[in-house]
Length: 473
Image (cartoon, rainbow, N blue to C red; front, top):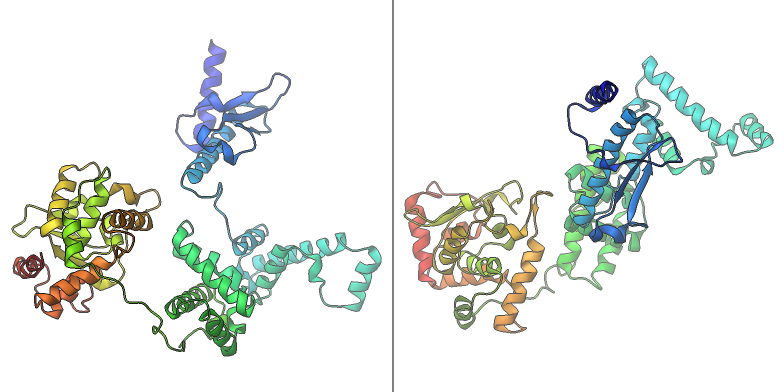
C-alpha cells in the first residue's frame, strides 16, 4: 500500500514538474505483456475511421518508466485530439507549415535566423561555421573521394544539386540571396494574415497564383515583366470576366506586397503588379436582376420552413439591404427591439469583419425584418442570431453556406430564374429611390457613405431612416 502511494505521489510530482498541475487520463497508456516499453493506444471514432489505415491508433512511447511514459502519453493524447478536431472541421490532420518555415526550422537547428546573414558577432560566426560544415559534410557524403578532392582543388561552384531543398534555401538565406518564387507566396501570405485555415481566402490566392504560373511561369515577383503581366491579362480575359481578372491581379499584388515587405525581400518589393490596364474593364458585366414588387409580396407571404434561420435571414435582407455576411455575424445584443425606433447595430466583431469602414452602421428595423428579429430574439438559443452559420472555433462565419441555402429557398418560392439574395441590396436601393429617399440616407443605409453624419445613429436620425424604409413596404 505504501509503495503504491509513493509511486502515485512520484508520478504526480514528475507530471507537475514537466507540465504543471493537471489530471491525466491513464486509459490510453498501454503495455504489451511481451514488451518493456509503453504505448499510447486508442480507438478511432467511427466518423473519422476513413482517415486512418486502422480502426485504432497505437504509438510506441519508447519508454519503460511508467511516470515518463504517462507524461508522453498526455502529449500524444493532446496531439491526437487536435487531429480529430481538425478533421471534423474539414481540415488536414496536421497544420501544414510552409516550405519557408521548414527552412527556418532547419536554420534553427544551428541557432541561426535570417538576421544572422549580416550579424558579425562571435555567436553568429560560430553558428554559421557549424552550418557550413554540415553543408560540406553532405557534399562529402554524396560524392566519391576523388570528386570531393577535385571540387576542393578546382574551387568550382558549390554543387547545389547535391543538397536538399531546405539546405539550398537555408544557404541562400544565410548568404542573403534568398527569394521566394510566386508559387510559395500564398502560404506565406496566409500565415502573415493568420488565415491559413480560411478555405475561401486560400482558394482565391491559389487560383490567382495558378493562373499566373499557367501563362507566365513560376518566378520571383520582380522577375515578371510588364510584358508578362499583359500576357496574363490578355490570356485570362479570353476565358474570364474582366472583373475576375482585376480581382486576381489585386490578389497577386497584395500577396507580393505583404510578403516581400514583411520578409524584407528588397528586390521583390519593386515588382510590376501595379497600375493594371485591362481593356474594356467591366463591359462584359451583366446587370444583376432585382426583385419586382410581385416577387417581394411572395417572399413576405412565404410559408414558414423547417429551418427558421433561413426564413429570418431572407426577411432581414429584404427590408434592410444587408449583405449576407453582415447578417450571419449578428449577435442577439446587437438587436434593439424595445427601442422607440427598433434597430440593429452593425459593427465588426470576433467572427465577422466588415467590407469597408463605412459598412459600420445603425439600421432601423421595419416590416419583415422587424418581425424576423422579434422571432429570432424570442427563440434565442445562442449569443448569435444565426448560430447555424457561425464557426466560433475558427472565429469566422459560414456566409457561403448561408448564401447557398437562402438562394435555394428563393428558387423554391420564385422559380429557377429567381434573383439571388444579394439582389436584396440593389432592390432596396431602387425602392428607396422610388419613395424619393435622399441619396445620403440611401448611402448610409447601404453602408456606402464615405462620411458619417453628426446625427448618425441618433434617435432623430433613426426615425428619419425608418420613415423612408416604411414607405417602401
